[in-house]
Length: 289
Ligand code: PDD
Image (cartoon, rainbow, N blue to C red):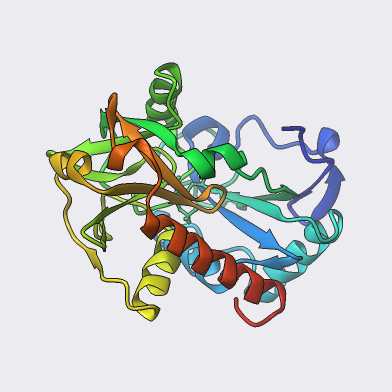
């Protein structure tokens, strides 16, 4: 995927090649910052209120004040989105604690760095949606604040790379014999027509896509529970899905070389994809957020 042409950095819109941050930025030196990824359909950001709330929660957890109010964020998004017209996009935004002499403890006075851009949304290949993707299980090697959308993603990078080197699209993370989430997604299982996904807490990112899938299930009479899921339940499930802002909902049909649900996407996924598309359609028309 090509780099975006224009970015927002600290109050300015700049050609990407001219945007500069300090080599002493704590995001660069310590990974001291947070981020969001927000899909945009028909020019409208998807679940913007939820994304800005999660951003506020991440910022509060790492004690960086939000440098911008919601109106200012909206203005930046409008400007970045307009550049690509009506094509579906994803906004990336990042806030770091800012530039200061290297010391682990917070600097006394520092101005956060604010960076954002929008680019055309890279949808999964239609074949991945039609036929499903493969995954592996790996030990979840992360810390106990996975609920913060932190830019320090080294563990996630290593776990995803292990999946890619095994010819798989995602790594499903296991902690104490239970599923937490994917390296960059949340995980659902379907058993006997019921959905289940691990509960919110310190071990998963509270995904915005995950929340919508739960909401759509509840609104349409599909049983759905947030509960601990044992690793063994993955292999016994009728269907396994991964969800994220950029992948939406993808079926996982093979895990650790074992077929799930006969190795094909199942009927519950078809139903949820319809509900999800309906929701996006309503959003494009301005009837949903
Ligand atoms: N990642 N869990 C992790 C660890 C993630 O990185 C992501 C998303 C999710 C799903 O969250 P949401 O539905 O809000 O996108 C769960 C983004 C897309 C990324 O890092 O690119």
